[in-house]
Length: 325
Image 1 (tube, rainbow, N blue to C red):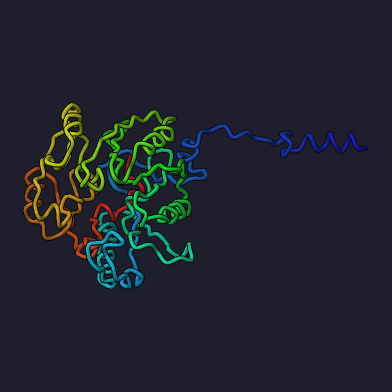
Image 2: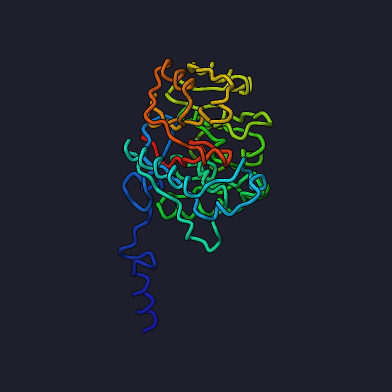
């Protein structure tokens, strides 16, 4: 009797008997077939933007008395910054971009003061996202908000930077669909570069390290790729290795000189919506002229006065979830 029961159990699907089906497709194939994970992916800095992640601070930001302690330049007005983010959201939606927002209710703690700079918190590619490990003591814990949100959006997390490694998403930019540039400096270190290489090894993606000057926050702050072979670059700050590499790859380089619009108004901190079409901060007429002269269409000029108070810009506040592949 016992043997009959045992034999019967052996034939059940749960014991790999009749009805058992082995999982054979790769994770990417499953995504492409609409199974398990979403298709929010990216492999460029310039193709059609499909989805972004934002976070608008609330009253908690207004109660901070010492701006410098939290890496801000000056006090942020919570009502005004809410309005800024609302207008940014509407501008994206007008261009057909889906806008998702971090929900701080995932956690009991009040949202950290720099959570609005979502671009730093993760990087999303073809197979999935990599969660950052912030370079500043003040920003510890922001990563978990990104991880929770990406999970809710069914975006697979293929890696999380750990141990003594430091990485912020604004330091990792696509040069082309098989090559990434990684800024190494105050926010991202060589330990993180090694972890990124390990995480992305299966995708056969090459990562080229770019050493950043001490006064540069992220690679994104000195380089913006707006088309397949076209980039904005702050030549006085950009390392020679970066300029040489871009020239070798036959990029058209649009030199952006240092100015009030660049340094104080973050006028080069732009978001590319589609090739040669961008969002930029308002009140930057000289930069707009440079863009227009170089056949870059400005779709929207957005007020980011309060975002600037936190020492970040429009691109810093925009987490890139997906672009057309």
